[in-house]
Length: 124
Image 1 (cartoon, rainbow, N blue to C red):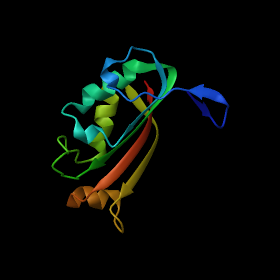
Image 2: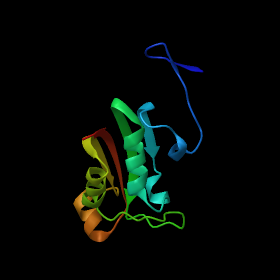
Image 3: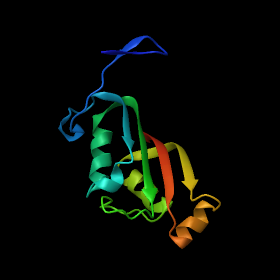
């Protein structure tokens, strides 16, 4: 068991398939650069929603226009990600967009250049 350095409270970390976890078990879920690697990212987000305790949050990051052999789900636009977030029972509390260097997010989407996006989600 580790301690949360800021608050001095115990923190438990698990390394296992979160699809097997019990509902209402977590205050915070971190899904970093995972959605593009799963066949059904919408189902993944719905499961994360189910796992949260009241007041919980999800941090999620993913990429747009980043075809790689291990990216089996390819997001094209921020609007596509936002729609999936809403359909999964979340609203966006905060977000960050990191477009290709020297370009705007809009230009990257139009030119299909890579963009990284990150969100803090809360149940809607």
